[in-house]
Figure (cartoon, rainbow, N blue to C red):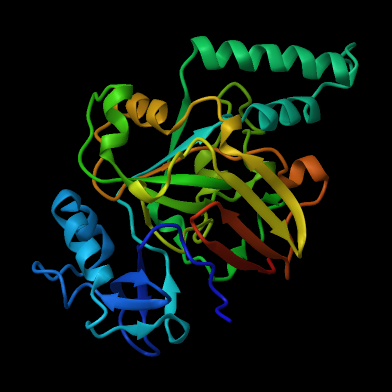
Length: 326
């Protein structure tokens, strides 16, 4: 039996290597991998080069997936890397209704006169108004945080409260600038899984509270964004707003929520980002993390922890935490 969870649809894309070999862009179908650098006419060196010509590539990929005469490699013998390397990473914060409610309650002041139930009800009403009237909250991450879906995650010695945040990630197919919500999904090639790790202790500046959040410090350590395993074409995902996001820690389920709980869906996020920035092929749009983070459970990541993250139709990533002494 395969140790890999198969993706939705007839095929998916990924980055693979043979033992001792260089990474190559591959098409995964029926647990076998076709080297796209040898089979597509423009000999792409990586998956991003396939995504950059997505409209041209998609019908060709369907044909290659259906052609059993082509020489393929068994998936079991290959190393699976992050599916692609983005130029830009856009990360959505506070985008799951229940997650925000949990965080707000966890950070309540001891002097807050409200009961927990009263606080939750009040915050829930604010979230509903925000979804109807406000704008998404988006910040920027570094490509150097990307690591593979089965790679170890190194926890820096300075990270006092490392936490998991499993998320649906949209992969951009073609440049998007000032696109409407109605146009936005036409610019999405497909979807993958991202675990957007965060050191909770450094989210807020302790020395200059007026500045607020410090996303560089808390989220951008090397390897803090395990990605993949696959890039699944958007046409294979019926509704990105109705997928199950599940993270298990050492076998125990910590996050298990539907993307229905997102305040702003993929189309809203892509359109919003494009009003300011130009999205490029291969860019990632992370859509936020649902409830069930370590801060909620009072259990943060530590040396030896095994995280297993899955999203409907996108496969499973498994990463082990490795602590580093100061």
